[in-house]
Image (cartoon, rainbow over all chains, first blue to last red; front, side):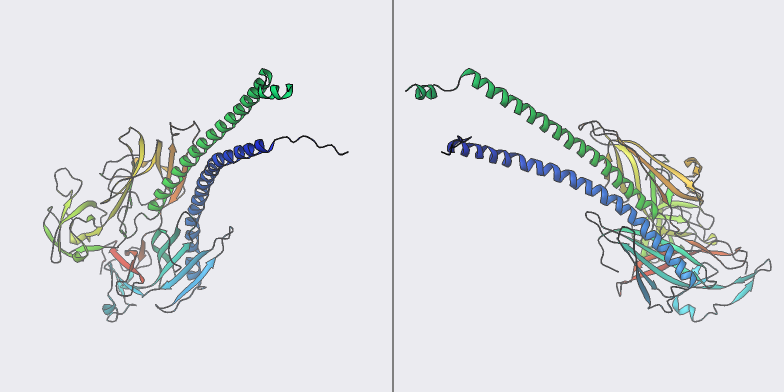
Length: 190
Length: 316
């Protein structure tokens, strides 16, 4: 004859045990979830912040690259209405989006003034002179002006890092940066 | 009959004590686990809050310092001190001109409040903070107190007698630049805690981090060699300073478990905000040039505006 083992819990006790487990779950689970969520959220913020600081270095690197390309002629924009876009891949897989646009050329006068467009047509930008010490001095210098816009995209909970830079190519071919601004926030793709 | 009566009689003392002992044991284990979890949670809060506050504060300062001097040309981008003009090693004031608003004097500025003709005066408004500079690298903080047709009235912000330290003459290319100043400094708040504060001129003060033990700014040259901050004069920060090392050390929050908070230190390079354009081979005749990125009001496109000034007096 088969012998039945006595049940560990009677049907009434089984219900009470189930109730106890449910109460424990209801009471402890939210606290456990809250604690783990809080810890992970903070940790993610710190990680994202660290990466965001890295984003600033990445967009600065993009500016150096653009200046080198303009100087070498690899990036050549012939008119003020032209622009070029490209992406730089970062080792962590976060690309830096770069847009370079050519602005209106500027003519700089020796008296320390940027000539207005209507004045430019009336001057000979190649005019030379002799200073009091007999040196050859230019009266004007023509500048190609470029606007560089490099953006490292947003990563929650921090916004994107965007660099805006004014770059000038002199008539000698030399490329210099004359202004850099960093912005933080969520931007649309340039 | 006997087993039924015994069941009704309840548990024996031994049974109750065994159950009680097991219950106490379980309660003790649960208490220890809960206490350890709570301590871990509070420590984690402390570590992340301290670390996050430090990173965020340093990053905020780094962004401002990196764009110091934007739109100002050769005017001083940094002041190693507070917004009120007092020098301090644990404070920094960063200047820029984000809108690129500049004007050149058409007559000499000698007296505070006098209306002087300024080319570009229409770009300024009453109450604007400005820098008055010239080709001899003189610089003075001032405020626009009056605005007339093509003219401005300026009052110095620093001198106790309300007079300009020296006249600004058109013969040495005197010009006026709108300035945005951001100050980072330590202060004690109402609860007696030392905090790192940020203040933009014309805006409310913000607290970046609490329980600050140390905030230090080291000024380094192009070779990253340290420079004595005292070598930076109040009105004429030396041009060869190439970067600022920020060090921020926070104390643990006394209301949370004790931890060691490592300091955060970041070296921020000063970005080039202007260039000297040579007009002869020996670069004896040069013109300063700064680019400002603004928005074209007609098209909404971003445009580069130029701000130029004479570095030397031409001999033509």
